[in-house]
Length: 480
Image: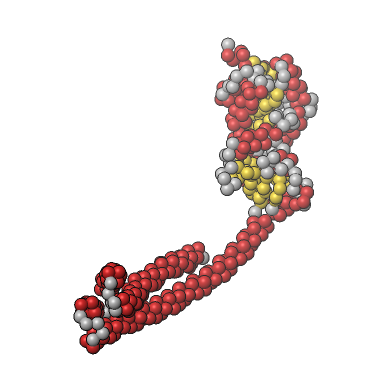
């Protein structure tokens, strides 16, 4: 459509230019014709009339010649000769006719002034002169009429040409306008259809500079199981971001003009769902940022698969795959917020003997009960529990002081023994027990995750030398 519009618009512009150029050309031709009409036939006709009048006056003045009449005749004669000179230059007919008038005029004037006045020859010359002047005058008048008729015909022709061109240009403009209006109407209909498709199939929302939602697609409102009218006027944070730190990171980034991408967990009806979210700053016509657009897609299935890939199938705890990453992140947060953390590894004492005595199914039940107990004891948002292999587990929790950390580690150890799971193969207790190796990180420095795990594992090795006990060191001891 755009190509056709450009082509038709170019035709209209070309016609307008053609009309302008043609008008200038036609007016120039009319001007030249009119100029010729006034400079030639009209000038000649007027000068001939002047000569005719002056000839009659000379004829009357020469009846009785006095000094005064001689001067007047001389003056009029000068005017006649000047007029004849102009006629000679402007006359468009045969120049011999002008020469005839000059010759007759000279002969008549000589006879009139120096020969007998009123004789037959002088009268005949006078009549011949007037007749010759009349011939020139008739030719000039006819020529003027001819130029006038030519100019008139040109005006009609040029006006017709301009009129037809204008008519064609007007018709083309109307056709172009109608096509443009039809095209715009079709584009508007397409735009409405696209908006409807987007509204019904794409999860998108529009947010103002103040973080308030002012438009949201029906698809997204259906996904959230909230009426559209109840979402409008709500804040972006309340609807999509339960994590304050994540919202602050996103808001700071999009306010700087960058696009933010992340995964957010939202409550859709009674269920918690995951959305992959892109928040894009929008630019107005003057390239200033004006609000934001949030594009979302359901990634709950992907998150479920990810959870399966990072979850131990027996206990439901996190597996070793995410251990290094979480320890690294927790260590950085500990240093940034100056909050101490405890990293521990524990092992079930004489677990091989337990499996040999009671069977592997019973051993799996022990591991499941252990996972359930530790998960309940470490259930805060920033607590983590991992099964890192066989009967070996790892955990992370916040603790204000080293003493608080030791107390809680002992509570974990004793809570396991207090489950009173019979273990006849153990040499340290009649029930299942664990050995714990732990590290207290004071939050003053960021330590590599490999180092942290290595220290905790060394402490576990020392604890297993005694069994059913806890060995813990502090980060400062590592530095020393």
